[in-house]
Image 1 (cartoon, one colour):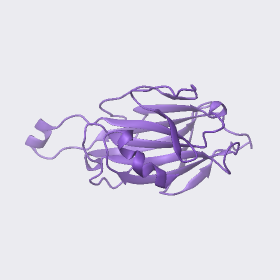
Image 2: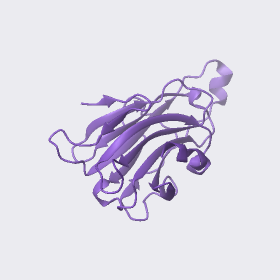
Image 3: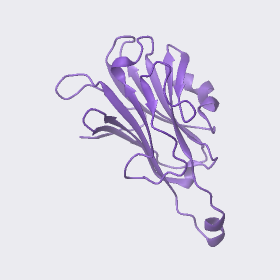
Length: 196
C-alpha cells in the first residue's frame, strides 16, 4: 500500500513483517504541460528533468549520483540513465536511482534526492511530476510525493533517505518538497544543508 507523502512528512522504511528494506528505488516521472496557443506549441522544446542523489556524511557531501556519474564511488547507489524528454507522468518512472541500503557505507547517513530542470523550464511547464520510493526486491511502491503547484522554480529538493539516530540506525524517508533554483545538483548544494 502506497503512502502519499505530504511536504515534511516522514515514514519508516521498515517492512510490514518487521524486517528492514535492503534495496529501494527512487523513481521520477513527468510530462510537459499542454501549451496554449499555436505559437507556444510551435516553439515549445522538450523538458529535461534530471534526478540526482547526493550522499552526505554528517553535513559534508561525499558523493553524488546523476546523469554524468551514474554509479556512486562505492557502488551502492546507481542511476539507470538520463531521460531527456519525460513522458511517464502518472505511469512508470522516467528516471530511477537504485539504492542498495545494505551496502551504503556506514559513514553515509543521509541521501538527498533532487530534481532539476536541465533545459531551464520552470515547474509551471511540467505536469504529473512525481517521485516515488519502491521496494526493489518486490516492486511494491512504498511512498509517493507529487510535485504540485508548478511555480517559477527550476529545481526541487524532493526527499531524503536517512538513518534514524545516525550511523547504523534504521533507514527512514522524509518528503521535503522544497522549491529551488538551478539547472544542476551543483547549483543546489548551498541550500541542501538546510535539509540535513
